[in-house]
Structures are given as structure tokens and as C-alpha cells.
Length: 260
Figure 1 (cartoon, helix red, strand yellow):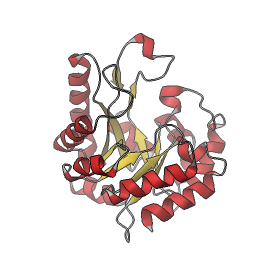
Figure 2 (cartoon, rainbow, N blue to C red):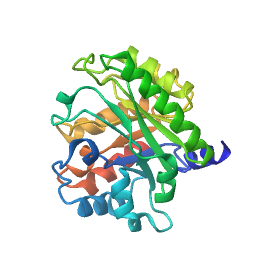
Figure 3 (cartoon, helix red, strand yellow):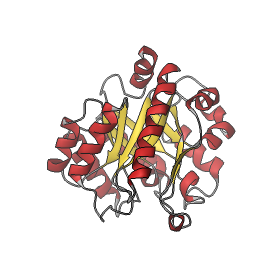
């Protein structure tokens, strides 16, 4: 366990204690996404130019573009281990969750951490129970290898509403921590007052995800300030970074809010 804790600490800035992570694993679930059509160009921009503390990436892209991470001071590669039906092309096939990359494979690719989903809104208890069991198995292997586990606890699924349910997220984030997550990635509730109980009820660092591109950059930065003010330990932003008109500039502005 000590190795996992040590490596989890590498995700966070020594001075601020917080983390700005960029996510570019969307192709695994969504295929070709605007801004990510050229995988090499998108990866290069995110890893080298946007200067995040970590990069959440699918195993295939980590295998192909490993050299981007092969130098001192590079962001920590966080390898996505699982797949869910959330795209328009796959959602009609029914709610499913599968592990597609083992922690051992991720370690061999050079990952410094791994990430899995905890989907809180499926219609069938069988999917939820299977998701929990898969998460527990991943945690055991990852920790044996010294890899920290990031759990993405989200109010997704056929029972989910248009807006995230703060009470359900509070439940899910605590559950993920109890299952052995080292870091939590979850949705921002939209209000600091409803975000604070999620953070207070979770004994490990909580990072907020960005979701679809915000209407304006100022709205994104305001939500970032509010989430940090509510106690979040940082952010994990994908489309709000590499779909921006100037990914480097918005990343600089995000860093200033997170670490400022």
C-alpha cells in the first residue's frame, strides 16, 4: 500500500496540495470527438503544451504515444481500465460495464495510476453489483503493484436525471473511498453548498470533472473556483481543455485557479 500512497501523492502539487488533470480518454467510449480527430496532435497539445499534473488516457494511446511522458517533469499518465455504454452508438445495446485493461497491463505501459468508473444510476442492480466487484478486484491488483486507484463516481445511467444528484454522489464517493479508492473523480453539483457535503464525507481527495464543454470559459473558471472553495482537491478536465479555442491559454487559467 505504501507504494500506491506515494504515487498518489505525485498527482498533487507540493505547494498547493491540489491537482489539475487533463482527460483525453474519450475516444474509448465516444470514438472520434471534435478536437480529438488527430489523436497524436491532441495528445501532444495536452501533454506537452497544457502542462497538467496528470493525464487520464486510454491504454491504446498510452501505448502509442508513451514518448510524450518519457522525461522528467512530465505529467503522470493515468490509465483508463474500463468501458461503459454511454455513447449514442452504444447506449441502445443496454447498460454494460467491463474491465478492458488490467492494472498489470497498465503498469507495463508505464502508467503512474489507474482509473475506473463507479456508475451510480443504472436500472439493473446486477450491473451495479458487477461494477462494484470489478472495482474491488482492480483495487487489489493495482495496490499490489503500487499503483493508486482513481475512482470516477458518477450519477450516470438510465435512472439518472438531467442534473447530478448531490445525495447520490455523496453516497457514491464515500462508497468508493470505502472500497479503497485513493482519489475520487466526480461531478460538480453546480453549487458549493451541495458540493461541500460530498467533500466532507469523503476521506480521500475529491476532484471534479468537467463534462461537456462549458458555455463560456468564464463559466468554467467560476465553477472551478467554486469547487475549490467547497474543498475539492482539483479538477479533471477534458473537452473543456482540448476543445477550447486556445487549449494552452485555458489550461494556464485553470492552473492559476487550482494552484493559485
